[in-house]
Length: 101
Image 1 (spheres, rainbow, N blue to C red):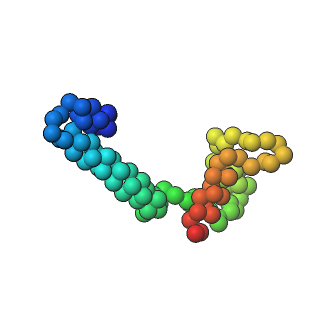
Image 2: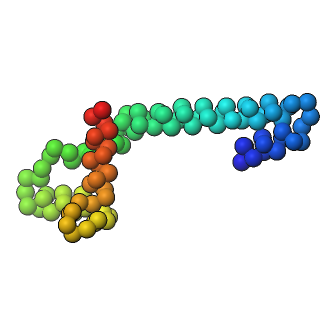
Image 3: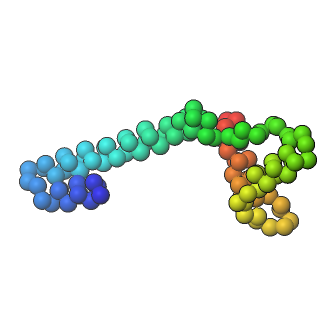
């Protein structure tokens, strides 16, 4: 919305004021996206959102095993019977690869 208004101000305002508003708006948008977007992974790690709290821990009893498998597979969409891996599992593996880098 801000970009559209700034673009319109180029035509509506005299003496280059519209161009100044457009330049300032573009600068603010780019800096905001880069700063906030760039800090997202750091913030997710600081808040312990990224990663699986059950990683490396295997359930000890049969009941825990059923709960563990039920929680980890809930809402997953299977890609095919041949592969047997869910999109969520592939996403978690990809996240783990990125975190190791």
